[in-house]
Image (cartoon, one colour):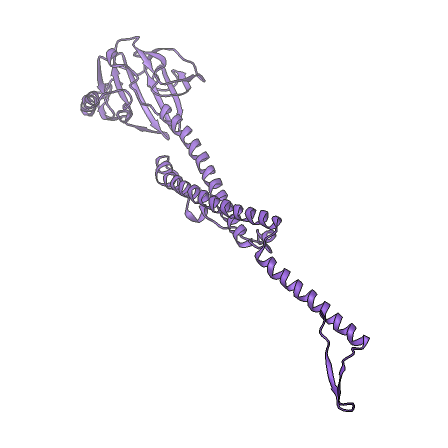
Length: 323
């Protein structure tokens, strides 16, 4: 019930009822309405600070889920980085050392990304820094993985070459021990059987009966099978690649032709006494980059330690060669 207000009229010495004019009533009503609307809106705003709508609740759950996934992603990236660092360590200190390749410096593995801002499109959002950091870490990890992948490709190629090298290097005797009469002369200064002067003997002489099988000591390609080289008689030369060439001289006959590819242990010819030779034997040479080297250093794939020691002793004794 509305309150009735009065005022004291001194002229009539009586109380009179206060009558509001229409304009005042309108103003009062307008003020009350505006005040109600203002306070109502204020209450709604305050309530909205504490009361979430269903849509806000869904969005909040999604944001929380994204943050959890982000933390999980960071942990996975940290684990991947640790595994990658372990691979990089082995790559530099084991694989590349074994295959005689230069290690990849950290500056190359962990080089940054220069130039323009790569993450400009990710700016301006509430969680921009978090997103940019994740994108940056992924890019760094991806680049390091790419560098490591190229390194492993190189190691694979080196391993293939190493396998070819190991198969190509002369590593067995050209005449088997069971067919060997004796090792007549080794590499070094020996007496020439014809002039009796000391002369550098660039190979090893294996005495065996005529017709004894002679075997290729490593994989390679036959580049000569003829008697057109002075003193060697019928001889074979095999190019093994990687700078290695072997020579088999004084043969009675051939079992291969020029241009033919052979593997270690293949029968290539037979012992004879052609050319400048005193008796049936095989003169065997190993050449590396055009220079004769001691064949004794290349029997690791065929002789036991005891056999190698015995042959080393015999080959070191200075005497007369057979050619």
